[in-house]
Image (tube, rainbow, N blue to C red; front, top):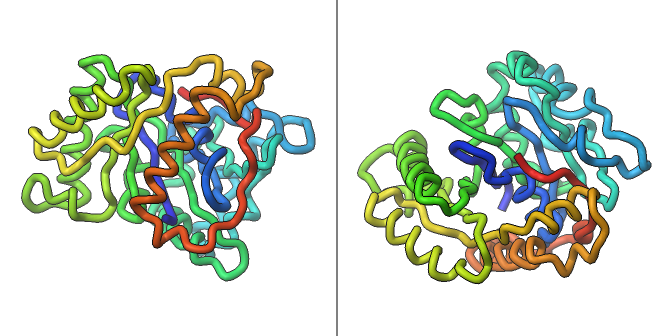
Amino acid sequence: MALIALAADKGSPGVTTAAVALAAVWPRRVLVAETDPAGGDLVYRSAAAHGGPLNPNTGMLSIAATARRGLVPDQLWDHTQPLSGGLEVLVGLGISEQAAGLAGIWPTLGRAFAQLADSPHAPADVIADCGRIAGDSPAIELFPHAALVLLISRTEPEAIARVRDRAAALAAKLHGGSRGIASLATPLIGVVLIADPANSGKLIHQVNDMLVAAQTGARVIGTLADDPAGADQLAGRKRGRLDKSMLIRSARKVTVDLSQQYGAAWANPTAGPTAGPTAGAGR
């Protein structure tokens, strides 16, 4: 699968929560990269494997100097940190002003993320949390290297309208050509809805119909449960059986659906960390 980029158009749909939830149940080794130019959340909300805080200087901030000299995919591991529970993360920037230090190296990062799956030494997929994006967001420079771009959206009418328009804009930017061609092009543009599980099936059909009518080329990949308690467990702020939460159960279904779609790319999966209170809840 290589690089999977997660993003949102506006508001706070929970991109970080989605990225960490999917990573917690990913079928092979995975690295979560906080690539939001506005700054990351995990360093403020998550404990490191040793029980102390994450180092804010090891991650996107430290990788900038290395990437300017060229970046071999395995070098990514020199800048990652394990969370409590074992999930490996590339910690994001502290504040948006630090994004200036990454100017010009986003394509280099995108290539390294995409090629990590084929590393002969320590292969892994990368789930990139790109946060909220607009047309001028530098994180969009990662997208041409992704196998899949997932737009995270809540289900209010205005949120659905925005994700439809963002999908169409991304398809034009990434694929060009006739409208609707994105359904055949790479990266595939998908939508993940944050929804009440009781209504998820109906919502998927409604939103898919809207995406098709607008000729975006995108489609709904699945839904993640709108589960604040599960998000708190994922963040380590609340005790409980995280593996039994609606959030993790829905994340597992999304990964199974993705595996069925891209099963050939997931040959010989390696074991990843088990779901646990490993990371911060989303934006």
